[in-house]
Amino acid sequence: MASDDSVQPDFNAPRPPRRFVQARPRPLTVWVLFLILFVQGLAVAFSTVAGAVASPPEVLDTAGQIALVVLYVLFGLILVLLGFRIFLGAQGARTPAMVLQLLIVVLSFSFFSSGAGPIGLAFLVPAAVALVLLFIRPTQVWLSEADPQE
Image 1: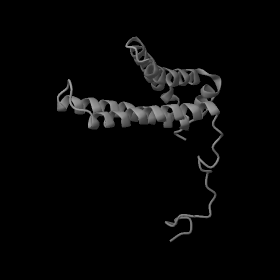
Image 2: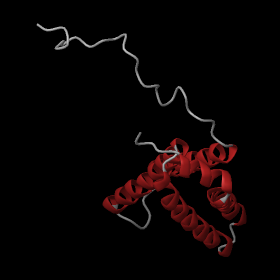
Image 3: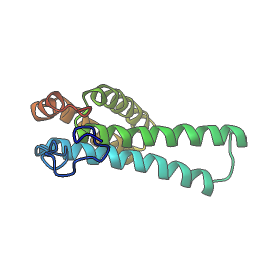
Image 4: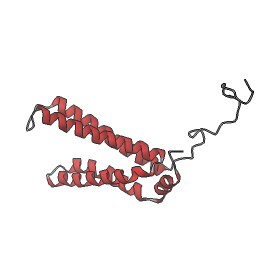
């Protein structure tokens, strides 16, 4: 067999640097945004499952209750996934995160109108902070410079 036609890989050949070894530092806004989305997603998923298990059936039948639990758990998992995507620098995660945070802001006003002010604040404050963080300069620079497909 010829020396240039080798099946064995050359492990001593120079390799391109790994992506996570030379990662650029993330701004504080990206860390806070990741934490907000992660905690929101986990809170939605766990509270939905706990509420479905611990509460007696009320308005919906079993199939409707299961469908609602699946829908809310998927919503929570999407929030967590968007948090990770923003943390990694994916530009495409910014718009869905904004839309979901706007939906949470709208939902918080229904709590205010029904007299549950603390619950409304618990929904409104993190969503408002996340929306502001999605629009400020360090987050925009982070999402515009990163290319996760490299």
